[in-house]
Image (cartoon, rainbow, N blue to C red; front, side):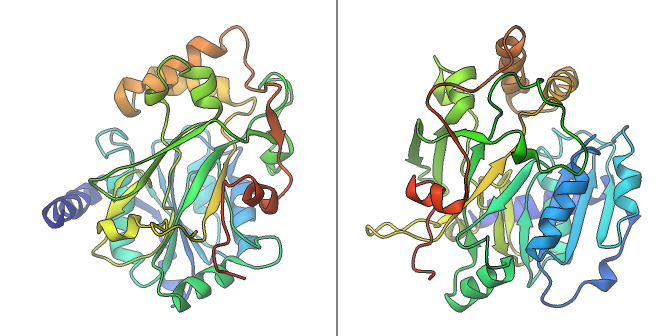
Length: 328
């Protein structure tokens, strides 16, 4: 594992050559700032609310890698006063789906900071997030000597057709995509890396009903007290050293955890899926996007009679999708 971690760090160091600095405001980062790291392509419509959401949560600075956008999102990000952004025109797939690029930026800038790695359609909720800023959580994690915090990815979707209600820039996407699967999840343990492997939800139910093992992984470790020796292995599903993946209690208790509300399925999804299918830059020859295109062609909806409408984090705790552990 040490050799593999060294390999990923060396790979990230080499991949830095693919990054072109467009706006570097890292000199203004304070010692205790919480940082967000994100890769994006053509997400201009999502960015205003994404930035607003995490600013209000207490994030101090944002790092973006823009993968050759054509919708003006790179220019938009470069104008933001708390954003540093790099452009990458190279292959997303050959950068291990952006992991190499972010590993490099985290190695260089995140050491000693709490770093949150999310996509533009992912919104972290955690225990007491309605009354306590993110710093309250990271302060408690520091006091408890906990270096990583897990969050299950929860796919959100509207009631009815995905293209029925247009999404507007700056709008909270959960106002439209406000439904989720409260059950239908499987959990196993990855013995090599020590992390949990979670699958299920609407993407397993709708797109991989006959082959659930091919459904996307929903386990994430997005929030980490970063050290330059660390490296993500596969998206934020797991990282090294493997002890950072031990985000669950093996002795019958519960560790605090959160949820990433995943607002992928809006009216913008059809065009986005078609673009990504054509680019073929995603995992396993874009098998996920092929399933999306086949299933949603005639009936683009995910809602079913068992769907549940999102209320707040306490609802997710009652359903067992997140836990406050011993944080009170």
